[in-house]
Image 1: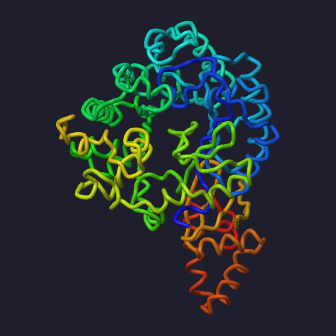
Image 2: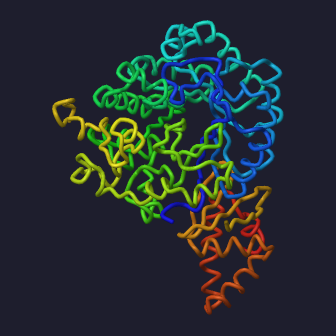
Image 3: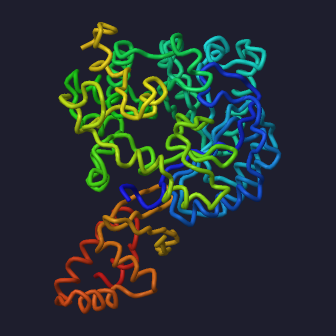
Length: 383
Length: 94
């Protein structure tokens, strides 16, 4: 098998139920699926994930707190040591008893609170109520939860989805997080689910993204306020290209951002020459037990469906899925576009394959957000 | 799935066999090791002391215990950087 023997990183959507209807949500969460996993099934899946050597588990959704049994899920997960645990939440549904519960009973969970703006107005750019209105009142609730979590000593961080619409407020949001004493993860927008419907409004073209990342990198080097900010991008070129085109080396990127392409790992490189680690070291699981190669597309997409844990468990899907086999056999030489003669190909390895599927319709389509590809036909002229 | 648990200094590591050797999983630390690392950790997981592990490996590899000791101690030193197996350097490894 051209992959690790089991996944190391898993995004597990425990429900698609959500109290909000945010514009960028990649799983279009709001209503739960009809056939979401029961608590018994979830406990068995968690046992299996631990026993096959999953290292990093994110409990996400939807909003996990929309499940009546969310505390039992967390308790069951937390009984095991030696894995990294994250609970993703918007912080809106919490009361003080919930906060006390997590800080006292599941202290190893990192509580990652979605916070895409540091004022009610900027928060409401992406965060929307079920009626589609900016979530201004909800901002105060999320702040209250955040402060309570910190007061109770829980491990907390903020997640900020970076889009064209809210990018300009990110730096102020980092200062806001710093004043609160929490770290901030900037997550570059990926257009799927509800986000796909707003792609033209939210997607970051290369130019603005490159300028943003350069500015942030200088700040991170020079100002301690930015020490606790980190960035997550769908694929390696989104980190390397803007910085290496501006004089930074790959070692600088590693040192400043603690970021490395999977292709920097010799063991990984023995398995493939693509930088996309979907189905190699990671996968995602939907609330109905369906397995997908990547958390960016962990919704009902028949094209990337890998199997269901309800049949014979997760490891069986990992070992036998035909779609995973197809991903694992994919080679850089098959990727369309300009990858073959790109100077960054050994670091990037073909761009984002999820974006290729979502926007190009095939696994081998070019990643059209990459400036080497989008300059074709004069769609952009950044390089 | 070949996976075992090894305890060190109050921490529990899971060690998973991979084609390249092994993946070592701590709570906030992920490390990859080669086949030798896997073999050493497997012996520790079976409760072998450092000396016992060295002798078993020397026998298996048909190598001198001194050579194996050198390699294993250098591994232990690397583990110590992660906060693992400091108990060996504090006692037997001295």
